Length: 419
Ligand SMILES: [Zn+2]
Image (cartoon, rainbow, N blue to C red; front, side, top):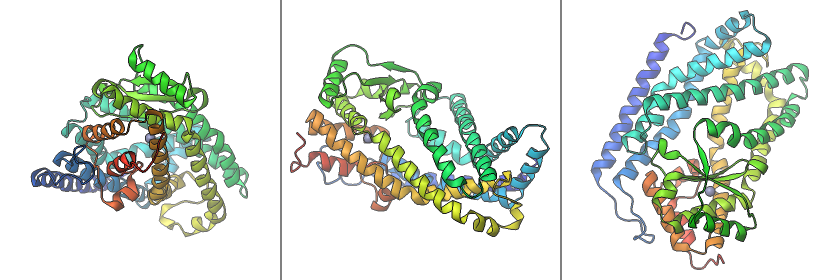
């Protein structure tokens, strides 16, 4: 760890310890204050429990703490000189340019993990265990973390190599060329995730023959997508939470249901959730997500192509960055990305909430069962300890789905005709 001072690491760990103890006291206060009154919407459907409030409050704080610590860790790497010293070490390696960037990025990922480890451990392992949401072993969690970091390095390092090659070779057009290359990269990543990434973590099996499968096929026929793939994932090997999602694109597109969901919810509620996921499938929401991401990237590259030289000239001299394709610029790129992602979250989540509401409406059209849909949403929130009625600004900033209260109001609204 010669590239990072032990004093900086200790300072980071101490401040995270302090933040975690504040989180703990927040949770304890929520647990001892008692349960607030039932929410005013269809009270028989749900109430906010102390556990839901204590867990959600901590998740909210962590959501805002993570980017702050990521930005501080990257600033420490840049300002403390580790970014340029690591570049000097990488350039002395006998490896090719590709190997040097791979070495630089992998080392940087390791440094950042060390700096942020207390918060990563608390948010990724301890919190879910303390609320009984996960029963994964510590060894299993660490292995998953290692796999995610290796995937990060395997995907991002080649993207950085491509970016540097374009900047070097086409100094006036690298932005648009990078965007053109990003189109197949993003498409390929979405296409390959169910085939290459997901099986590294879980086992997927088709829905077994029986009444549920026949009902799912009936919904698919109604939606005009007969034969679409629906799988059950063995999520119970790690978590007790309930979920379902759509992944992949084209030939790899599939609906995935958590095994907990199929085991623990009544069939009408499982079908309500399946119909919501079929809606994402039919309405091509994955394509829409890719198109929106690429539109954001296009705007970003147009701005960066024009402003990059001016930004470079204004970076602190102490960071030791000499050009746009200097390896020492990588932590600065990650810093910019961290800040931008955080600031763009309300826009991205706002688009996502519109898409989710469209899927709720289409799903109801398929089942026509308002009460089963409302009950399924309630069960999801209760089991996953999600806050059914968060503060408006929290929903605006960090919720990819409308709040449970809004979703239930929406599905129970008799003035809307879903048939
Ligand atoms: Zn959805």
